[in-house]
Structures are given as C-alpha cells and as structure tokens.
Amino acid sequence: MANFMSSWKYYHGLTKEMRLLLEIPPIDGNEKTPDFIPEMEKFLKDPWTYLNPWPYSHSAYLFTVNPQLIFFGHPR
Image (cartoon, rainbow, N blue to C red; front, side, top):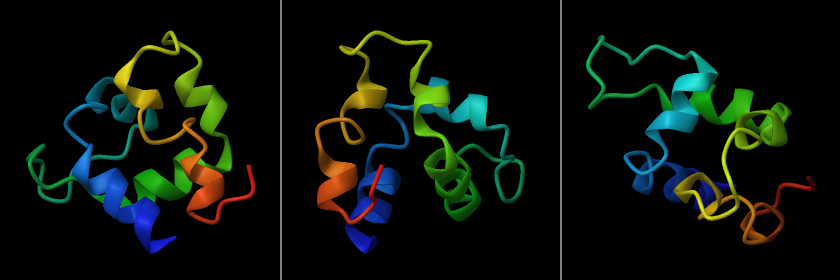
C-alpha cells in the first residue's frame, strides 16, 4: 500500500479534477497541501464512482486502472 500512497502523492496534480469529487479539503486550505490519507481512503472504498465521469484516456486512470491497484495490494 505504501507504493500506492507514493503514486497518489506523485500524480496528485494530474488528477485534480477527480480528487475534487472526493470533497476532502486541503489541510490548511491550500491546494498545495492536500490531505492525502482521507482522499485515498474515500477513493478506495468505491474507485469506479470517482473514475466514471472521465474516459479511459484521462490521467485519473494513469495510476489506478493500469492494474496498479492490484499490484499495490488493493483487491479491487
């Protein structure tokens, strides 16, 4: 799971639109300091809900559907 967390943090700028759907406010109100743990927990409860609005070519799929969730240890 540590690898998924690292990937989530690394790509957070590319997936801003998807992350806005999660409705988790940044730690201090600054987009440069997102609260990653609650974002990931909410996303992993139902990832397809947050990926559904975009086509497969969208950057939100970059680190989630290229079977990295399974590779990183998440069973969905």
